[in-house]
Length: 234
Image 1 (cartoon, rainbow, N blue to C red):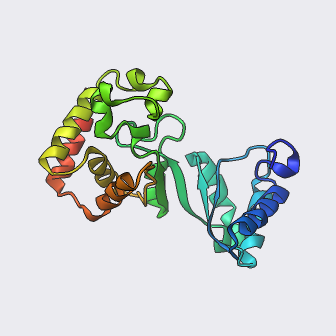
Image 2 (image 1 turned 30 degrees about the vertical axis):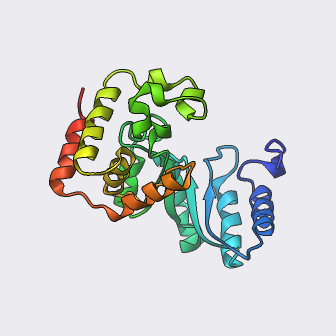
């Protein structure tokens, strides 16, 4: 998988088939439940990429199909081709970056709204904004080597403007509701229309358990309104 030659990179038919078979061999399993295209590949005809998935689904090597880092235009293109392949190649989920501080950012705007209308599932990666939506970064003195924002020298930049005020406001609500800041961020995110399961990272069992606990919390309409008010702070 050198990522450079035609058969070992991108979404060519050869690379898709070879990669899936190699993955099944490494994982010692007989199928992939959900196969993602990691990003759109403009260098390959989408019909070629989807025909490869179609064949894999027919063989029951892949059960469902999803995409990642796709724009609305990319999704519309793939969905126009669904008629040629039927439900076997229907996009079920879209895995894009999203957090409640920054939303979708500038790379793939409008995807969450589109997914909600289309009945797909938006799978948010980076929902804790690379650790910014944790109490750890409210006190800069607690950040150090091993923290992503610290190691990337991005903490001062990411805390600029109204971001710190929003974080402090969210932290105050989390304390009032007996939640961790990261849990508040996940609970609010999961209630957004079109939102499916987020993918928060964790570097310890404690963090993993904290993230999972957010799935048992549901905000009232008033709580959601309070969170929105903080996020709109300028």
